[in-house]
Image 1 (cartoon, rainbow, N blue to C red):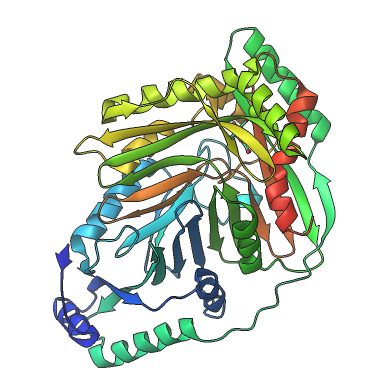
Image 2: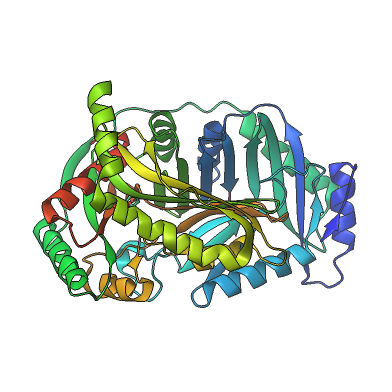
Length: 461
Ligand SMILES: C=C(O[C@H]1C=CC=C(C(=O)O)[C@@H]1O)C(=O)O
Ligand SMILES: [Mg+2]
């Protein structure tokens, strides 16, 4: 990676073009500049007119946003996805020319994306636009970090490109993002809500519980699908806006693939890496919120002391500890969880902090962690096999890692739950729950109902 400092757009472009030696050669150039405040949702909305796939990520906890438009480069992998993605990413970084005077996480060359929960489960038509793993380096990107705004352009240059002309075009694109765009934000109504095989789903919970009672597994997470039909095409900007307003303590994302968009507001961080500082979370064990403060406290209290939920949670803590211990030093995990309140429900939550050892990347950690027993089960292979053989849906990207990483080894991935695949005027929502030996199918069904609420409520349901 060549880094350039302190130059004008035209000079930067000119120098990069001159490096291209052959007629068919390409040079990836990344330029980041600080810009005036620009609402990330406005940026996302303006991009709609550009007819390019959009990518949205925010951690509402940190008021951190990345919004990407288009694909300068795409890294797609169907097999050996971690290895393939990491190899292509580091090759791309080696060859890129980067102009980024700011050492701010999420600026410069950044890739955003996600993957399928289980690449061994045959893909159905529902998820046909989503590969086993797909990461994009956007053409245009807005980053909001610590109250500052950065605009990044990633461009693939050819030898016969003209610096002056390109500089003009890029300046116009930047101005477009600041232009007005009227929005029609209201009126989405869910006309039809079709639960996919609810009684068969409860049977599968019973069956998983039997497996567990026969000691074939200790925990198996089973998910179900709800199909929605709306009165009109869902507007993704509005969906994101409503998620941001209603789902604090969450990671809100949208990944567009042509006319399909995978959207969610998940509370579950898989891993965050900033410099060598690693953060992960164990999140499993669920109860509703109370209607009054008193009732809420009483529910928190019983969740905290409930043996079944504590068991669901402890499987996750033990597995995460075991999975990352060889990759880190200074691993710290509290002995007991705390309550993590969300708008519609509350969870048991244990934070994990550590120092990432030299030579390891966020991909190494994701590969170890995915799927945690919050989405797969324990033991991993047995529970995954059960899900593969018995679950009544194609999870697609639901329950899998989604997130971003930059060229300075910073990055963050969440587990894509509380999510749905929006397809024009229809959508599929997904929710799952951890089945253990004392699970009651009816209660698990109710638990998935509350987990569907965050998405249902922003989709006019
Ligand atoms: C699988 C989901 O939630 C997981 C994360 C937190 C709590 C869970 C639970 O209590 O069952 C699940 O393991 C989902 O929301 O679809
Ligand atoms: Mg549960």
